[in-house]
Amino acid sequence: AQKVTQAQTEISVVEKEDVTLDCVYETRDTTYYLFWYKQPPSGELVFLIRRNSFDEQNEISGRYSWNFQKSTSSFNFTITASQVVDSAVYFCALSEAPRGGSYIPTFGRGTSLIVHP
Amino acid sequence: DGGITQSPKYLFRKEGQNVTLSCEQNLNHDAMYWYRQDPGQGLRLIYYSQIVNDFQKGDIAEGYSVSREKKESFPLTVTSAQKNPTAFYLCASRGGRTNEKLFFGSGTQLSVL
Image (cartoon, rainbow over all chains, first blue to last red; front, top):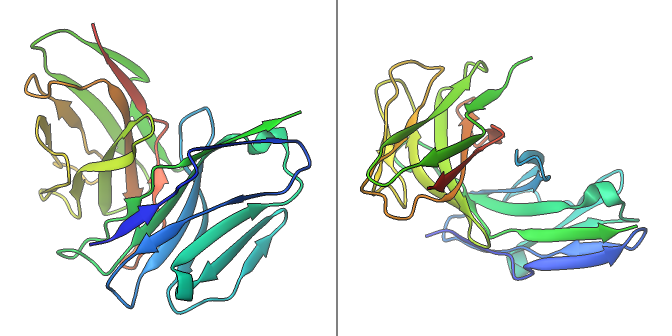
């Protein structure tokens, strides 16, 4: 069974600090996908990134970067020079091979990031 | 613009009442999902549907029912059997045949009077 652990319930930083959100996953599949979503106060989850299990290359997108390490089953997310607009709940998700023909992502409990001005 | 529309944004349920949450998408996606979000609990899957006229129970389906009569619509009914319905409900859809990202609606907050 797939499982995602986000051990950090809440992180509070001051603007311009760097912050890393941790994500550890469990799966028996060799083929799987990992995702990060952002949930601002408006409530709608917004997709940030998708990474498949065969691509361990780290990715950078502006102030966002992701570190995927299969050896430690982790897919951590770093925000550089955080801004107040980064305040949100961030979810890590794992999706294995289809279950009955359907891809069913499992979400972590989320990490609430608060960036103070 | 294409997207997912959930309504209403806020909903109140009386004791013993069934209520229905609406979810409509114009993304031409086959797969649709309902998640429940409680504080500190993350998102838990209630029901999902891969195609029209077919749906499957998720991890916490008890006390809920769904229908999928049209590709665009996937309404969720919270029945009186659901004893703790207060939560934030999110509808999502996914296109394509591979493990693509989910698109989410803006959610419905359900509270008990």
